[in-house]
Length: 269
Ligand code: DGL
Image (cartoon, rainbow, N blue to C red):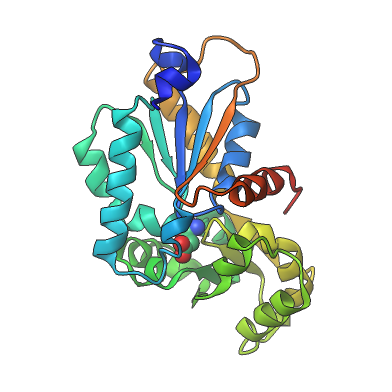
């Protein structure tokens, strides 16, 4: 099946925007995209069969990401949103060189708004081990180093809760409490959710951290950037009629599709 068959169109402006993540986390970005551009068509693809990406090698994540994006473009996506911080740091620069004519938007931890939220705040950046290890994150951190106290916090094992549909449980709360055990929570000002899975556990996080800590996610900024890029390329869908969302996953189970729909309907953050 390809995009054009699916949407019965040979008009490029009507073609869907592919939204890709290692699993169900990118739904937090899809949600922001739908708020920004409700009339567009979307193909959401989660690679849950190969998740997690964040504890794999750079080469492996790059290979997987490139092969998925190759397929989206081959099958007619008019734009691609890499709704995964890990895959963005591994492959987006390479993909932009490979496909200069396709709007290709990545995501990065929302460090800038967190740093600007207060005078010299204490900011923790939660992300996968790979995102934190990569050059892209180091460059981002260097940029804001003088304006805040920034503490990177790799969170192996956290995305698995969301991937399995657990966004609210005693066990999850204990996991989050252990992650933040080394911190003096009353001194923290902001926490950046540098993995697209994490916004789904915002409520639990807020319980552990306290209401004085502000959480920041990258989805809304990525959605605004996608809108700008699509408009600049003249690729906006002409009709204002509500678009369609198609859920696809390498783990072809009804349970995954159901989880995606459930997550899309949740009012988090
Ligand atoms: N959702 C992905 C991200 O934004 C990571 C999850 C994973 O480890 O696969 O980084």
